[in-house]
Amino acid sequence: MTSSSTMLRLISLAAFCSMASMRVCDPMLVALSLEYQITTGDASAVIASFAVAYGVLQLVYGPLGDRVGKVRVIIGATAACAVFSAVTALAPSFTVLVAARAAMGAAAAGIIPLSMAWIGDEVAYEQRQETLARLMVATVTGMMAGQWFGGFATETLGWRAALGALALAFFTAAALLLRHARASGVLVRKPTEGAAEFSLPGYLAGTLALLRIARVRWVLAVVAIEGALAFGTLAFVPARMVDGFGLSAAAAGGVMVLYGVGGLIYSVFARRWLAALGEQGLALLGATLVGVGLLSLAWAQAVVWAMLGCFLAGIGFYMLHNTLQVQATQMAPQARGTAVTLFACLLFLGQSTGVLIVAFSVDRGWLPPVFTAAAVGIVVLGWLISRRVQARGVAAGSPG
Image 1 (cartoon, one colour):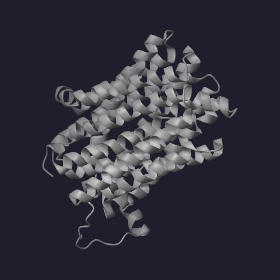
Image 2 (cartoon, one colour; image 1 turned 60 degrees about the vertical axis):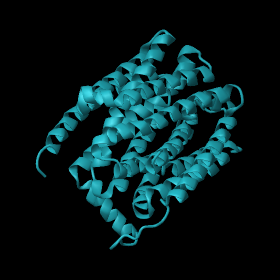
Image 3 (cartoon, helix red, strand yellow; image 1 turned 45 degrees about the vertical axis):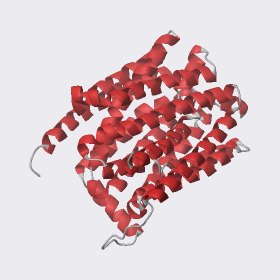
Image 4 (tube, helix red, strand yellow; image 1 turned 120 degrees about the vertical axis):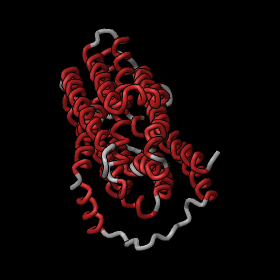
């Protein structure tokens, strides 16, 4: 096994833990609302605080990864996650829990986006979507594990047990990454001729220069909308299962595993589907499946149809999002770390906005109409992405 292959596996382990920590609180919302005598919408602050911090901190991790090395930052972020996850598990009040979740999001922000950027640096464009899909296997299984274990622990061991287990997992990932990076010489600083020291004015000027690129602005705008429509609704699927179908938190977390299974199936067959459909076909079909899934979750009378909707939404989302991930790694190759972390920043700021909007609706019984509106919006978005990706494909084949 090559050093790069081993590094990809270990980075994927850290990404697994990061996504598990992101989604572990989804099945806990109803239980948290009962324990702290607040509404389900108010309890969703544990999700929104994570997403806001995760998004904003991308503005720091991007240039930091470009400057000191992406692997260095990934290791540091993974170690910080171990610390903050332990703090979260021990939080004595809901206010402290929300603050600790924000710190958790701030630390986790340095893992998956910089892993994508590292792949962009190490893997040729022709193999990049397939390699990103391999990373996606880790993130999807992490999401599945987080959602299932979050629900299971809430019903059996207590929600704190899930957060404590995450702390141990992060510590293990950080230790393994550090050992391999030291052994392979990845942490040895390589002098860069003419490299300037980091400065805030220089960073802001570089970011503004990226934002002047039309392709960058388009990708960032699209991923923000995707985050609001897809991730904003995803956070409340367990609450829909509990309130709409009378499932327990553990069962609701189990249903959410179907979303991850859908994503995992996409990851396994990504290469074949890309060959058969192309990037534009993946975007259009993916958005359509998400739309159908959200409509099933909104209006199904039997739980089996809602479960099917969750599964279809998972396949569809990862078809759509993987297409956007590839665009993100290529939209500004000269500053890939900063560009990809801007991409993640907008994704999770979009998610936090979506969570706040849906939180307002869930306490008023508006969840089905909001899911319906999101379904329509995601289908329209997929159609627009399909047209633009196709246009980029043509442009990529022309000189210059």
